[in-house]
Length: 431
Image (cartoon, rainbow, N blue to C red; front, side, top):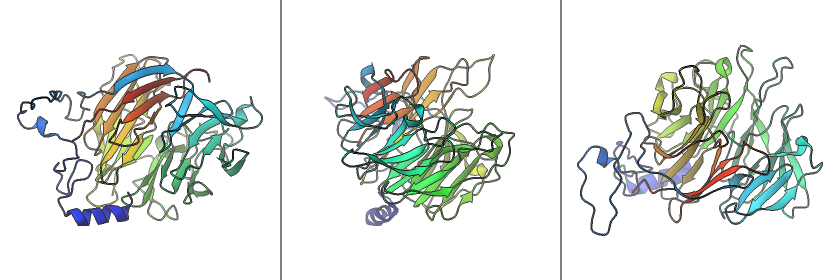
């Protein structure tokens, strides 16, 4: 739903219209929104034939923990990345693009890039906008920048739409689609000696047929781990692009209201947090953390055109994940990975966000999945503690209604032949 649809729906419903759990006055009134009344009032007995609702646990800056994914199957079948609106899942195996029509239980090769066996042609990510075009990001792990390829409709070849100067497209963050908008950022550890940084953001406004560079933040300091793009988001309520940049003294949060022709920032470089996920809800923008305390940072807005004045408006942490403490070692234990966001035509929203453990922390092993329908209240839906499983990606559900099927994936660990997936149903933790 774009901003024009949002305004039209708001006008039709009046000032009391509830979207994604909140009304203009901040109260939950819509029957389709999250019900938090159980936290404030006495529970009523369930009606005959109804199952008792679970008791709420959490709140006060912590995720609620009384709902869990209904897990149907756990398996190891390669590396899936994307699900389209028809439920077809796309993934990779070396230079090959794989496709599945049964939620990754079985796969077949859809397309293979040339020079099989060379990492310059290895598939890094797959992006499929609503129009069905298949965009493959390949290469970029060596000295040569990665390419963004558009696979021909007849699968006879591909066209290079853009090549980054340095770096690649990450499968864990840094890309988003919304209708005909496709935004992609580059990612890689900086080469300070060679003055090379993965700091490009590119935009397509024609559904992935063409791309142009819209942002390349300058280096501020080499006294930082990196200068690279963390995440991008298209905000349909404000018709705004958000970009987050890391690390440390090079960090910044950018936004543009004119499709990248001009940019605004919050505070000085190095002042804002350096999140690896940005999610635009109707009443707020949330940031999944890339630092401790791990969880959700939230910026609340009263109007789509609002913009943050300074970093003090970012509530950090708005929600903190309960994680193991390691007295002998400090540092980030988990950080936010690629989210899945459903925006229904009637104004409802659902966002799922995995937090995979940081491989830079020698002891951390937990991965957690959070979910929200309004950006305010968050639910911990899944948790696993396994060195061989690093949750990095969520695909689905395609709708908040129906079977609400989702696939939670580890697309980073193991060899091309393995990789961990959780086939599950998202619990209906909203009314």
